[in-house]
Length: 298
Image 1 (cartoon, rainbow, N blue to C red):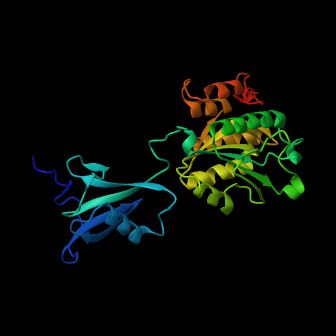
Image 2: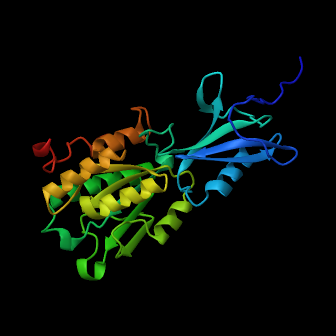
């Protein structure tokens, strides 16, 4: 039996691209967003060359932190299809670059090997001002215990600790990867990005702390913009005002950020009662987490 040839898809007349391509080149219409620009590539060009051409045509408009898929217009179907494996350009065609918010295969899945916990600004000076701060501390500590049990890296920030104090004593920071002072509201600092780069395969961040509508919100939006899936723990984050807290959680959920609970996060991370750490996690959640005013707003 003869060896299979690489898939080559020819689309006669598929793109409406005019003549004038250099000798030995194939005309291709490159589409991105609302734009369509004719160009050409060498005969036999594959995925990598198409990506390079997209970058040369639209580089100033492409967010390099996003994930993309290349699609080909197929006359047979009358619409775009994902670029076939082994595709090589043989005749004129039309291709487009489509941005993806997150990897379609993740969609909220959490695994210890691809997850990092972010603990945001759980500091002493916030104690009298933040609604249900005692409950938030209790649930935050439960999450940090779970992270230690499961070997999940933890990054902690403190907002202007000189004026607002250090992380509250009830939060045990034993074994955390990084404790970092900041003045920026978002936790996404150069040091944090460097720490994430040192952890292979990071896909998801579990985020909790204060304040929901300021540092939590800005951190979540910045992480999503970098292609990271964000899970905000609703029972471990709060604000000075319940109105700000609830509107922020609603806004974040509408952007595709996952708003969840501490128990849901911990049980998703073990995933199976036969997980070797299940009993330890089960002991953490035997007592239900305090609802911290969330149920009164449902």
